[in-house]
Length: 526
Image (tube, rainbow, N blue to C red; front, top):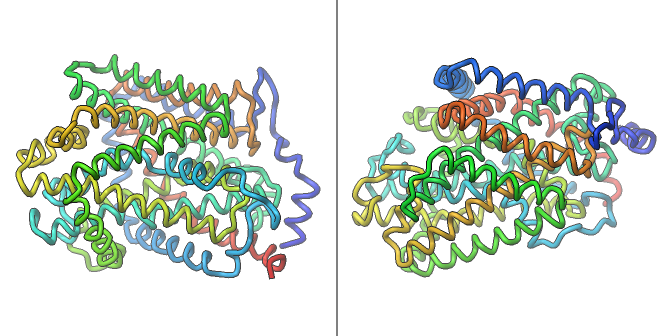
């Protein structure tokens, strides 16, 4: 195994250009991956022009629900395994191995590194679900964990614990495994930064054939459609926020303007690359997020100081029970929330994992796994405790819109909380800006990932190619909004989640391949 990998990385590093690459019109693309991915995208959009969006949504929803219901135990235990695998790897002798080689220094400061992985991995989700998710569980908006009685102290504790469970170490362990595998084989073994490279220890040269093509094409489609869905739904949320704060009545036209703006800034960012674009925006993003967090903490200080320790304890106390799929009498809630979340994290893992891999050269395996798994979880606990804690306090004490009507409009739940706080309009404007920046950082980082995959694993694709994918991503979101609005976007979301089933098998196999690869360098660190 060691000889095979060493021989491969020394003698065939020119595969990073790729035996199947073509260079034309300023592009440097892997012919099969780029061509088939682009063709399938055009086929999908053409189908939407013919098929009614509601029909497509119903068909894909049925497929998604069937997968979630039939493979719920598989998803649950696979995700539990990823957590255990990450923890064992972190504590094992493999933890000393450094990504990029024994003497490699980190390319980015720790603060910038954490800001980039956090913004790409989950930033916008915190803004959208920080209020909506715990409120949904507490008020029985769509079931409660363990079927507890809503509006009770137990319901409040479980609402916060279950929210952190869905955004904590389970999801980030999925990202960590994919990111570590990609980074190790790219920077330690000299293989292309592409999903197929991870499986070279198992499949050998077949990883460069159609087996690898299929894996990379799946990664491109999941990434592109996942980002387009988020961009479209995010445009709707941003438009709702703008209408709520400024009293406007913007509809599809404003949503398209938001998409165009986000896409334009994302194009400028990808043209400048990671250092000049993505890193700068991520750092700005983190400063805005911290400013918002600190201000909301200040105005809700008494509630927040109680909420943080209570949320942490609720997470610790319920993590085992929520992880167990057997003997549950809340299967409807488990399917609709937990299993759906695991499928969504898995379907996004190629995109987020590859981006984290690109920015993590120079970190040890132990440092990498700890930072990627636990730092975002800690930030999530604090964020959800602040926003979710204040929201539940408003519901319990009948304050504002949430207290009067609960989740009357889930996309506006965050702004309903602000309406009952001092300087609510100022915080709302800041949040709208933050929403847009989060979308931009997700868009540009996702475009860089797709560039790399469709360039045969090259880290720096030509600028025209970066512009192409950033534009396509925005165009897909805009076209789907124009054709079928929210129905079309939700159909696409269901389709992306459906890809999680085959990707789960890919991730399990990835764990085997990663151990094989790490074992070849273990002797260097004794």
